[in-house]
Amino acid sequence: MKYFFDTEFIEDGKTIDLISIGIVSEDDREYYALNLECDWGKASKWVKENVIEHLPLKPPLRWVAGGRIDSSHAKSVGWRFKDSIATEIIEFCSPQSYGEPEFWAYYADYDWVVFCQLFGTMMELPKGFPMYCRDVKQLCDEKGNPQLPKQESVEHHALNDARWTKQAYLWLRNQE
Image (cartoon, one colour):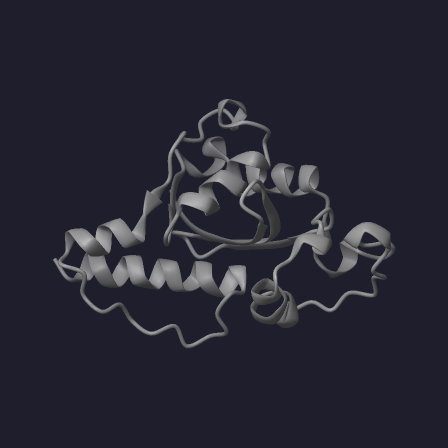
């Protein structure tokens, strides 16, 4: 089963901290979660203006000291602790239920690192998960770098971007 995913994250040159993840499966199931443990205090101006400002869920959460969020009422509006996100992804992408997973992202390198970090190290990925991710940008380059379909939805929203990644992949495959 192919899974198209995107993450939004805070990156400071030393760490990659997950903000949100969106996954769209080949059979059109969708998963979206926001990371309750993100260190918002490290967010750059660009991330604040282009990602955080446009988060689709404005939860009844309070910003607290150290850039963390108080978790009161968080789960009901899509915010999760990282261990819960990892557990939910294992269920969503279950090799036993859906077959061997194949992960695709667009400019996938950081997305794959932050994805793997949900489970600890890459060596701790769930049984049956591959240790690599495929990149739609590389597929595009292999096809002569044609102009991909324009994303019509709000960018830098992990689920919207995952949907577009699937669309771009299918468009590229149809170019054969």
